[in-house]
Image 1 (cartoon, rainbow, N blue to C red):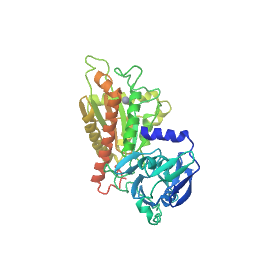
Image 2: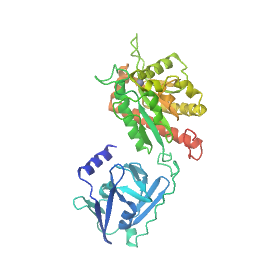
Image 3: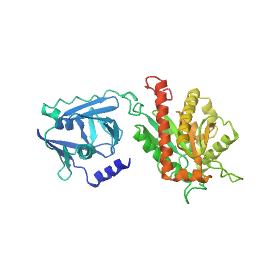
Length: 411
Ligand SMILES: [Zn+2]
């Protein structure tokens, strides 16, 4: 989303005007701007289309704006729009407030003038948007009355499918392992000063960006170098969250030949089946020793409690399917071995009330993996593979449940 961020920075460099003038062959019109909750300047879509000619329609999670004869689709709340079947970034999302659809100011100040340079121009100094030359064909007739957007309660997943096949409205939690005083493993073959916690965060943020590009909303357990208690991480994925993905880097203790092991593996929550799975779970669970007051609140006996949960079978099946999808996709880009789908009792997974998996993306104790995990090209490949895995899991889930009107947790 570098483009959107750069654009946002540009727009922020000059304060947005409080109102803009839209000048066309049919006259002038002043439209006031207002700030959305995040402080981004927005303008009313119906004001825009009544000035330029067009229509506004809100259906489910999507808003469709036709300007001239050009259709634009906005996923409400998501920082992108779709034009010509291409998803393009925005600094802020379209929003429905009290039956009025608001579009980011960026759409009129940047997007329209860029897409239709021969027709539209925006003069930031004068806060003036000008339609140049002949009016667009459909505007020669009387501009159609903009349809009143309806704020009908939009069920999640109810909108038309995204270009990648899934329905809009999904939310997933990404959990970059470790953080703060818990460095994770020391990163034997990572560049100097880089530990597991740094790499999980770098890749986690990339996964977030990749998922947003795919129309999936993301909640992060952390976006900075801070420690989140293991027992608290899962609670980031509750009611409206579809799945939980924890990101880690493996390592082995010093022993003969220990730098040879490499590759990725993906875990779902269950009792550990093998000694190596137990070792990895023990290692990742060790982070509790960095926690202070939270330890007592989340004793490791939490696993027994969760195992009795009636929902667990559903969770286990979905978590296993998700783990398989994640591992398949990691294997497609990873230069190391495919170490498969495994099960173990990770504390971090016990409190998630949704399908939850933990991916060990490779070994910092292997030189090739160490490079792959820390170089930008490797990180981008892994992030894209994880995002693709999430999307294809959600797609599969929607197909299995037919209407796709439910969440993976069988809500
Ligand atoms: Zn870890």
